[in-house]
Image (cartoon, rainbow, N blue to C red; front, side):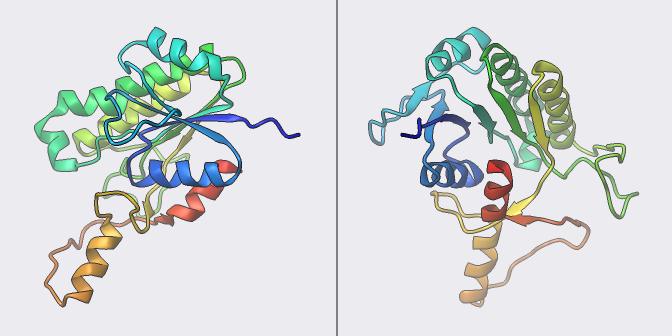
Length: 212
């Protein structure tokens, strides 16, 4: 019989993390969900509390599961709040990534997959590639770029995905797509922007790419 492999998802309750969790579970993986708060909604045997500021805590909680991958979906993504609270931005988008990457290096046979952003490039470039030099314009982008550096240096088996995604939310928080569709359905006015350019993929496609 096929031995069920364990995959760890950090940030499992966000838009992408919840989708990745569901995707891997339907593909016959055991998903270990990690967070820093007690799970008060329901007792989930696959939910584990870790201290993200402590590499030893992460390793000690996860080593018994022998995970094949840690997928990091944790992110402080509100650009305006990142400007207001830069310390929090760097803690979540940079230093948690560093600690997860270090932990992954100590977990034999474990790949570290870190979800970054396409928000790293300034207005001078119409199209960007992996070889393009990042030009972060704000605290959010700077903290995500440092997180990428930590992810790649902390573990020999790291993959960083610079991506932007869209899709229907299956959690309590509305996605950008949900907001647009609900405003169209209710004929309500929606104020957007005319100076942001990105090339997103659907959440279902992104889950498939990560899995393969």
